Length: 116
Image 1 (cartoon, rainbow, N blue to C red):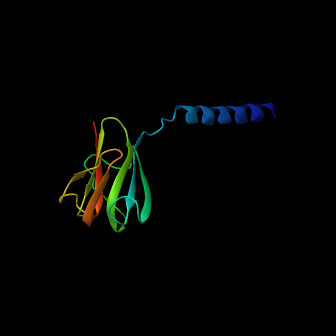
Image 2 (cartoon, rainbow, N blue to C red):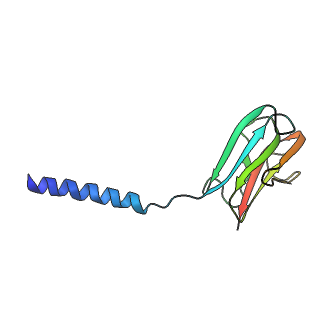
Image 3 (cartoon, rainbow, N blue to C red):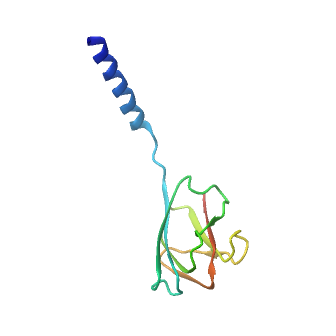
């Protein structure tokens, strides 16, 4: 019985120590999307970007939402956020600056982030 208790304690201690050394992924950015220009009407929600969500140079779609304006709420130092009017990130690259509203009458379809 004693050896079973020792084994249980060892298993718990090993699991607990593994959890302690697991690194947290960095929060890279938050941006809010709107279905109308002006970043006030038709709030479609906020996107949170965590390290590992997007590979370097990867183009991410906006889940089919009809997005016409974006506000960059915050971004990790050394990172830059961009929105595009096509779903391949090749047309009309718009830098998204913190605290500023970026508009597109034709609508945004995708975004990407780059970090140094």
